[in-house]
Image (cartoon, rainbow, N blue to C red; front, side):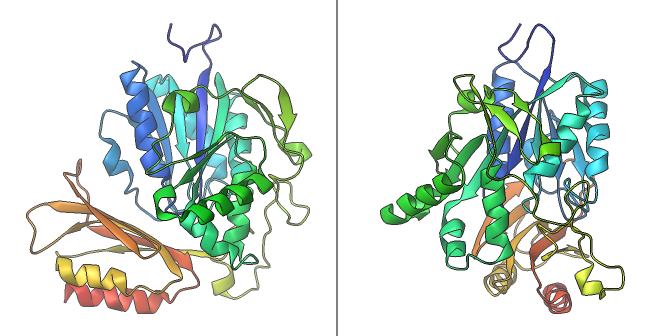
Length: 356
């Protein structure tokens, strides 16, 4: 019996939350590798707003994974989460399940979906781990009324574990300010400052059980010492009297207002673009450098005319990274762009030029 098994054979579930580009996939990869090294079999649920799962290419084919694409777990595809968890368990018999939510998700609705699965499978929600992008938190504080900032606050409030990532990109006084801000919103969850999510994985894996109290508008957790406490000051929606806390708009609203039906991220847009041919690497890097500020996250798989291998690219807040990969199976060249109220037409026009 491993440290992840109990007499009741409950399967622990960890939710990885955090805004787009914060480092969730890096942490997910680290945790999956840790479990495998410990002789355990992890399974993964990956949620993407786009139509394809790109981050899954990093994990390899030896990890059981289900993809929930084209929407957010906490809204449009929330009802599928219980079924996906049950299918993973029935088909792969994992020792632990890791759920990486889209960065636009409010964790409370995901908590509801995960705990609902416990009615049909022997699962136990162990932790909600929120990865905070330090530089973005500092930047968004200057615009404290925008929805992205408010969503980051909700993700932090709902966490039972907090990781302040990209600490190396903060000045000492900025690091202190970021930690103080996080502590104002969540004073009880353990907080670790990291570079590339290099946290203590043993501590993250040993999270205490989380008890859901969504009907009361908050969650209850057990601290490291085993003493229950409540999220009495946050971790809830502020919408209308909808049973799941979603703020649905009038069907007569313009199409631009009906992109999403969730109050936490109805300002978030996702555009998926499939490439028909290889592109020039320098032209593509220049294209990324010129992206407007309201496109804050992009990722994709590309073939370059001037390079022998294919690449997974990631872009977040004016910084880009390219990783050589050998995709598993038939994987198309594709790019997904996520942002707030950007011009879809202008973006598609620039992408078409790259293929010209």
